[in-house]
Image (cartoon, rainbow, N blue to C red; front, side, top):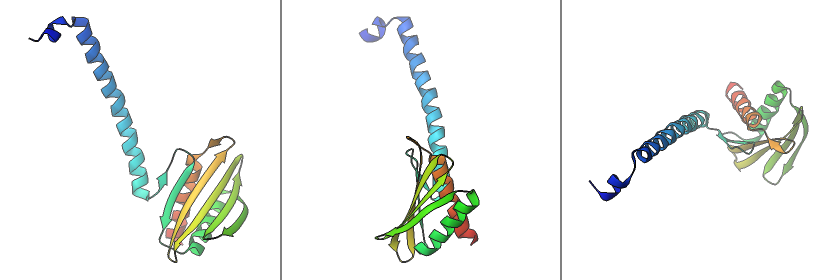
Length: 144
């Protein structure tokens, strides 16, 4: 036996073992949540961030994505405030209850469009609403 092993009191070993087991339990929960979040994003092709943003690239012209976005907002009962074109982007401003929504449709090529949805609720962001707008737009694109 080494000197370090002999010098450690029995309760020190127990505390170290308990700490390792506790950390393993906590990390196991994080892994499950991370895998779930990855699975949701990977299966839909949507990237979501914790700052209220959701992203998706569509293989479709901006006109088609905009029509699907406006239809999705109408279905969700979200009021469109304005829509304007700035350089290679279509920017849609909408409002739902106490949330302000900004949707940017960026033209990547004649047949591909990147959608970004950002939802703010006062000082906070609402990732769930941003994600749902992108998912509803995707659903409209698939169903026509």
